[in-house]
Image 1 (cartoon, chains in turn yellow, cyan):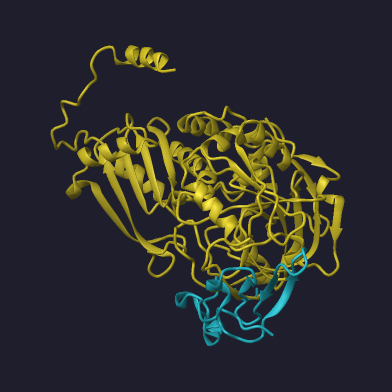
Image 2 (tube, rainbow over the protein chains, first blue to last red):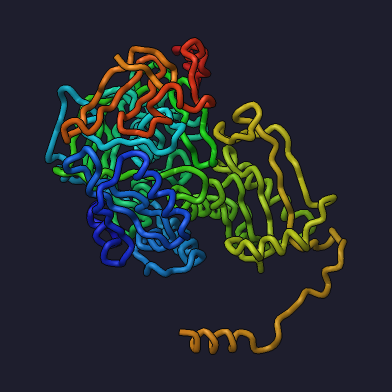
Length: 472
Length: 74
């Protein structure tokens, strides 16, 4: 099911008891970030927050933690809010296979209500605020950014929709962090090699399905809009930008159109990141904003990011795991059971697989390292048997405790690529990676005492059903 | 003119006034591009109390690593 726009999703959250409105006055700093960090500490079923009384503002409205829990993630997919995580994973994987679903084009959108092309001042237009104490400024961190491949502009899938952190560094200037493993870095390089500015559009306050698709590590030529259609089960609605041949999400609250300035680098950061560390300061590309349009009384969406888990981790958990699952299944269709790459955006990945012969699980681990996402993440890959649920960490720890022999099962591959934000990489962007094979050895890898695995008493399944009914 | 809490340049400028009169201003340092709101805690706004680990020396800014590097023109 599709949500009409961002407000439609917020209304659903409210009806489902998953939106908490804070009407008491709060300070932009530190209250907004503090409330969200506190909420993240309260478990994995938390509501979104809606602030409507912010000190110094007259009519600012800010939504946060919109997808910061498993119930909200389930609602994004139109599923009951209490859907178990593993079921959400397999349903996401099923819909992922429906890709691509062509977009539906519209001529106008609600965000055309108000348009600004003169004297743009983002500090006045958007209720910006600091998240973490060491941040170098105010950031857009849940906006999607649209850009196009300059070498092959007619291939629809090469139009990129991605989530990148953007620091507001002037009245009409943003800094952007283009991690080399991400698609925007390719588009910026193409433009700078030509000495041209790269046209971009930025959308804030979007339906969660496009935010999800934008944060999914799709292949370079796969369209995020066509994936959003697959995930929501009907075509995703887009409308053309005015200054460039770019598609915009119809249901957004605010649109910024602009261009990445060719050959310019400007000091950016630090920013508290999903790794639980600040990023440090570096010189990064700059976006100049030329046009803004927005709905009347726009709702500004923002995301608290910091020490995991925060909204980021719920937002990029399932949709990071599924592409790895599909790509591993392409290589080993009869063996791969499930993939959990939810930990720090897949810096740790847990793969459940059948094993065909001795050494097979290590090959599965090495394939994970060479998937597109694995090239920048997957620093530690844990491989477990088919009967181990990779989303059930106690089961994974049991497998590590009992199946792994460090002499045989810990494989270190030196000198591989990793995203530069990994604080342990040295130099930034380079690391060794490790595969831990926690599967049961099979022939010809004959070792250990694994011939007597523990079974359950007869009748456990019947008792489980009976007792769960009695406990309702 | 205001002192930037982070790099201590004296060139910071007001870029936004609160919609409610006199609640706060947003300032931007053109040297290190730090942004702050005058209503933030003094650990953010006061140069003497700003965390030393996050201070920026203006001399280091031109040497910051380019991410990504600027490619050769084709």
